[in-house]
Image (cartoon, rainbow, N blue to C red; front, side, top):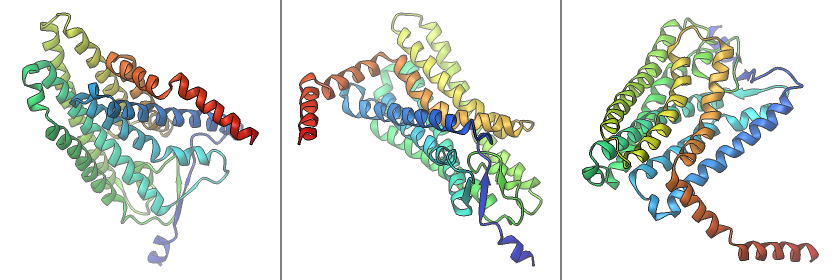
Length: 324
């Protein structure tokens, strides 16, 4: 009898962001535009870093990888959330639910470690400028990126191990727009108190340890910058402000959801929207607005790709095809 019950749940119902039918078309438009902006903004940074030789250094290599992970973070659940805003029954299969859990922890875990790597890069650049290119050589940069993905994979595998064998035989409504691990485990037909503690401990350890490393790194860097209060440090301060802003925007919601035990479902839903949609769209804005080199490289890319002669030729070709 128990075996039969355990095999009953083959899909979950996602309650989404709002149950208001009047509000859903508006949310569909807003989040479609935000997702498009995430793709355009982050892929523009990747293309700019690849195309401009002046940006072929460790800091921008890591920045391009951050933009790629931001696209991944935004893409694991946002397209389905947008599609679900147009349908009445928002369901997701059991396997697809596990896939969402796997990818959210893979990408967010990887991004945490990558942000630590970016802090280490700034530490070496500012505190040991004469040895910067020796320490942060190409091999080291690639290793740091590989480590971030490996840590993300280990983290998500450990998280998924808590869920994959849980029996689901009754409730199947997830009060979110994607399968968030703490919400899914609460639907299991067994006592999940210990499992919930392990999930919080796992995610909390990665979040807090990464955040502590970042705080220590940026504290040392800020003291160094303060001692060297010269014109050459103005650029360093600007870059640090951008990094610290991104770290705060990303880690704030993550730590609140997984470490703070008294948050409500509505608050968790808002914070989940923040770190899956708003942080990926804010990262390119923060880095481009505060970075003259990136803005200059984007201007050069724009001038190369959008030359007046090319635009006029394109318009003539379009008009010619229409008359044909």
